Length: 478
Ligand code: SAH
Ligand code: SF4
Ligand code: F3S
Image 1 (tube, rainbow, N blue to C red):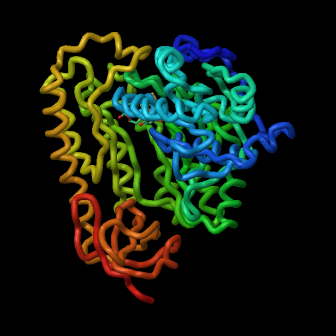
Image 2 (tube, rainbow, N blue to C red):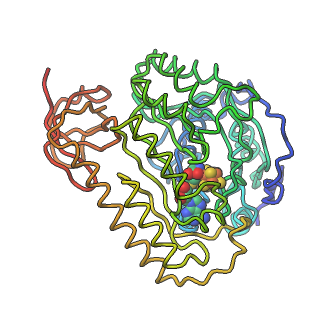
Image 3 (cartoon, protein in one colour):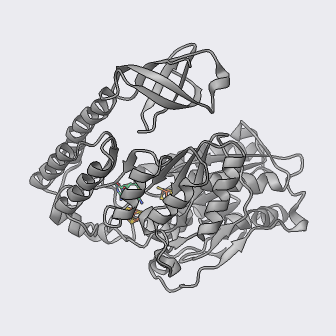
């Protein structure tokens, strides 16, 4: 096995503690000695997992381009290949082992290629051990070390050893990092990092560290810059955006931030993810009052059974969840609500599952991400005995999907005959001469047009047809 430079290794036990209460803000600056590190070289980044990872990949691309690397379209022929990984469920990890296997062969032919693995998987001890032992990877770093990327690559070039740097229980906030954004009209804007909720099934609080909010001025300035550069839509990111500001020791909350961002002139504001317990009246009022805050809320419920919710440590009941969304519907009648649901949590009974189906019916969701519970080592739920068979879990998932699909269709049908503003994203894969984009309620919409100059603009489309996964309409010329 290759020699190893072990700067630091992950520890799930350490990541559970919330000892480090001082949040340091690190303002990124490229050291002179790394400025030409990537000259005449290329990079490719594979991104898995949530929007948090997508935003991180844009930062890593920015850092790499800042030291001279150029973006490649072919991972197998790049000088640096990074895998920005996700650890949320076992199948997320399976995909990554597959790609690592493919790169192994390629690296044999091109020993100078640098393969790096980063994101949430390296934060787990066992995953990191397996990567070190079984794969030819040059650098392994976690979610708190992205700004060390030039240094880590340079160490790997110098020594040809495996460089491992994974910090646990970290509290830093990275500011001023360069970004190469994927889109010219839609942008991710991190407002906070980490999670302190510790839902008993979830690995995120261990992989992303403690909850920490960016300073409001840093966020507002970033959005003002985006407006100046022609961006139309921002999505505010955090694992629990409703907890924004709690750690800053002021009474400025997420609702206040929405009101302030509405004044920047950005046309569309979205945000994800919300936690039902922390969703407050001020946020709902901001959704009602701020023209730029879009009428869509993703509010993961996870289960409709109060006992399961309790064991999941979600800190709300069926009734409290329903009362929040009913209040929101009173304030924003046109809103679309989507959710996340887990089936097959350890020992979930058929009756408990029926309560989830009942809630889905009552809540009138217009979409849901549905998952079979996946055991994550180090989390409390991983120790719970589980009596449900795989077959039962799949059967529940299928029954749930049947119900949630009805919601998707209903959510599209209600717009048939209406004219809706669509932010045009790209050419449509749905047919020649078509474009597609999203409505305020986050409904994917396809319409006929050959005019590619509309990409990045907001246009009016009259909806003519509703399908389960999208709507079809006609462009309304002014
Ligand atoms: N912070 C967000 C999103 C977390 S991850 C939130 O709290 O809603 C996205 C979704 O993955 C979760 O909402 C949950 O439904 C699902 N998930 C998380 N851990 C899981 C696990 N161990 N097994 C199956 N699904 C899981
Ligand atoms: Fe995971 Fe719960 Fe935090 Fe969401 S709120 S990231 S589900 S621990
Ligand atoms: Fe996955 Fe990490 Fe996001 S585990 S869902 S990439 S926070």
